[in-house]
Image (cartoon, rainbow, N blue to C red; front, side, top):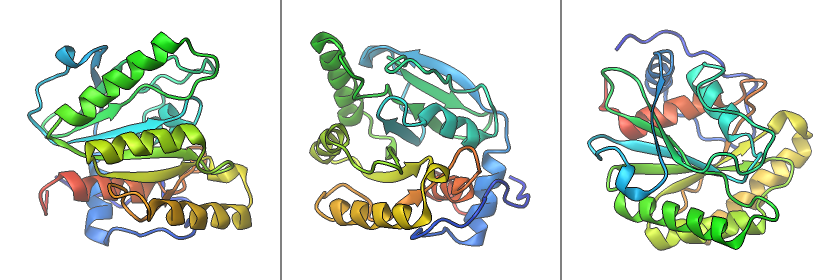
Length: 230
């Protein structure tokens, strides 16, 4: 795979851990490729075959998950964005030709006034996926940088701990808050992560609008999922 210069890094966020330059370049090349929608799976039996590494994105409704995925792949319309909370109700799989990797968009959680049956269906779908997907390398848990961790986020963290699935917090919308507030949220989040056995300790700070942290996220995914020198 060719290694073009990294793109879309934006301003350097506070408190991040950056992959080395080789992985940043590999990540840039990986997500410069054309990515496409593979399948939407409403239940576990409709999942594609677990024949390759996977990373998944989880987050509260309206946290900016679709916007971040679109920024990651450099394609405006790959993941649907909507102002309607809870619109995504399937596990959406994305792939690129000739690369052994799935990017998975999990249904948003924490939508207000959702029927109990809808919430339970979401919990069962995600729990089945987390427990039954041996190729899942990491879940990136998206948290709004303006607000930090909220009770619905802590519930999904407990679910991830229970399933023993590695996860890493990605702060979104960092352009919508001050640097001092952002630094405080990063510090508080790191403190919380230290109490969760499945949590990766480092936080990635991003802005889909400004491109902040996108280069780091690409490099992190490449290092997790691709063989060295890919």
